[in-house]
Picture 1 (cartoon, rainbow, N blue to C red):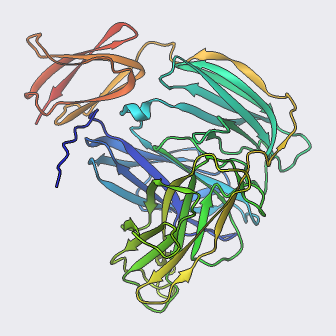
Picture 2 (cartoon, helix red, strand yellow):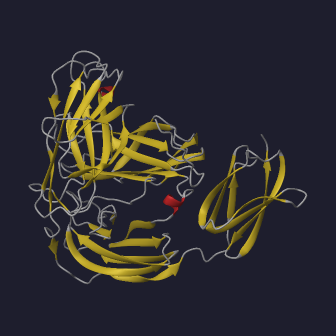
Picture 3 (tube, rainbow, N blue to C red):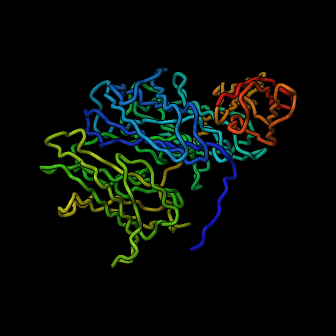
Length: 485
């Protein structure tokens, strides 16, 4: 055996979140959602919380965690401290505000905080979408490391590319692109996509600036490219087999499910115990397409704890993902319908540069105890980089760039008093931290940070009062804190 010594590059919490339906919704039905989270960093995440934003056509009916506060359709849930390596979940139930139509799309989004304490999370392109009267507004802010970033974009109206362009943003700059809603389109919707041909594309939630809209299967699945943000976007439907495999993006065009080459896919397997007794073990054998990159597989959220492995040999030569829910104790639907459902999700990338019209097919077999397997539907996609409509209108308006944070620096540090760690937050980039004891001696320093949030360990400091100078915009901002073990 060979033991490898590994040392973290940076001590920080790194929080990841997913939001998924516990069961796919029928039309007119309530929707149960599970929010799963994990700290994959190297230290505990202090005062963590999740903001859940739901579609305006939905209302939060109840949740397994109390709602700490509400702003519009956004609900805040406190998680307190999440130890490094720890995970958890909570459930919410959404109720339609009115009988929603068949194939009505809706969204739910979860955002976990703190979200920028690690370098890998603090460099990103932020995208926001809103409506102002009859105009869609897309606001883009550059928080990446690059000094100047060229960002290609498309604007889509009802899945037709109506405008293209490139914007230049320096670090900290923001820009707004406006596009008028189609006055003759009762069910029109607009979407913006950044880096459309890249596997790291960023796509907004489709917005409609009118009172009602219907079928909205977008060409690009909403994607913010941050593990601290998860967006569920799908539709209601007719009653269906509860043992089903769902792909996100679903793919454009219901006959072919077109997606771009190199775009990643999230697969979710839903299952339900419709038998006559409690299921102790549920096993899923998921046959992966030969066109998927097995090395990119990332397991995501689930309804219950599980283990997984790739089977070492299969007669077909295809990779088979085995997922085992041991001692799940899943009640049958006759006893407890709501608790009889489960799901698991994973993320995987395509093999690089697949040719147009390559077909990706995936299905799974679900075993409840020793019973015969239940086979899901086959989720499929067709690769195509040109199977979309384009009608350039030149109707978008780019508002001039602004520099974010042209205000005095604001600083917050917590917890105070501190025991093990101390978090610093600012509305501007923190360049350095210098900590002194009451004798004026420098006891700790951290340079070249270049983050708006950072963390230091205080476990080695003696109890007492300390003074800290934060270097921000070339100037020192002074604060004080206490250490109490």
